[in-house]
Length: 420
Ligand SMILES: Cc1ncc(COP(=O)(O)O)c(C=O)c1O
Image 1 (cartoon, rainbow, N blue to C red):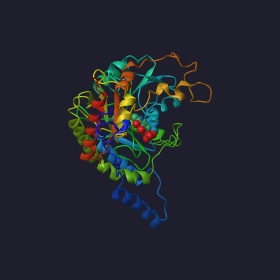
Image 2 (image 1 turned 90 degrees about the horizontal axis):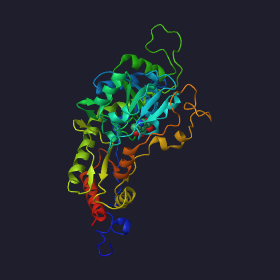
Image 3 (image 1 turned 60 degrees about the vertical axis):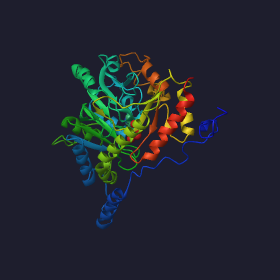
Image 4 (image 1 turned 135 degrees about the vertical axis):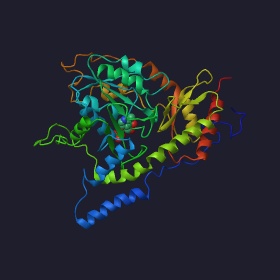
């Protein structure tokens, strides 16, 4: 590399980086959100009444969320993790049954399962994808399976039709984790409308947000909606006319009117945010079309991703090194990238140590669990993904200059890593 000019020499080797300017901020919250929050304060000051939860703003946000989804019911809760918990509670799963979980997801997409005394069973991903596929799910189904969770990771939708076929044939409910996939579509249907129930995270890093944290449980089934409402608010008898007591033991996981007020203008912006993320992803893909050994994942045919980040695969037949070396070099060129996105949950200490309920090892150690508590589930596909893939975080404010920098940095690093 000594004979290269500073501009050609990799920045990790002391060359000039492609980009020295920071990644652009998102400016997610604007005057609309500020005005919505201020209006609540003004009202509170004028009336002397504190704003709370389950009020006008939260009702309106839930209705508008359901409208965005094309009908159905939405319950706003205080995080995506809470949304997962509430959705699972709405499904009324028996303890010590098994819930199939995708290998790579946020911990918040798994932890609610053992907290309900159910056993999370890790399915592998499809080859070359973070997402689970029908065969990988089918391989984990037993007569103890009470639910299937799928997560549309990075905003690319899971291949839902064959999964729903498998689930319907066995009468197993499907929960879609849409935390990263607001507005993504599969064969013309919005992610979250295909399974029995769906959970969304609306924390500040997601496509749309209800302030700093938040989440939504969405379903088209009225019975599940009322159970979700009960499960998110200490079992209050929502949907049980005439009930005089709370009907379910649960937590208080409600959202609140201030967060919902911020979420309403956010929801109005959501279609344009998703559209812009798609445009950015498409432009990145076009700008990288000339690369020989780096390919962007464009998702399933007949689907439109929401592109929470863009995923690239490296061709080790043409390249030397490994993902860590490649992404270090790309980072040094000024392009923020991540690899791996996250490790499989079965490698987390809390899972390995069964650290859920004191030192009991529950739910795995319960005599009521009839499966193999020590079973190890091989994950060859996700290992392959981790050896080949990395991601670049994008958002709606990424400019054509940022995209050109991504392409230039990828070309520069690729050329340094190409085998002779
Ligand atoms: C796939 C997935 N599921 C669940 C969650 C949990 O959401 P929250 O952080 O809002 O609790 C996240 C958050 O990043 C996620 O990406």
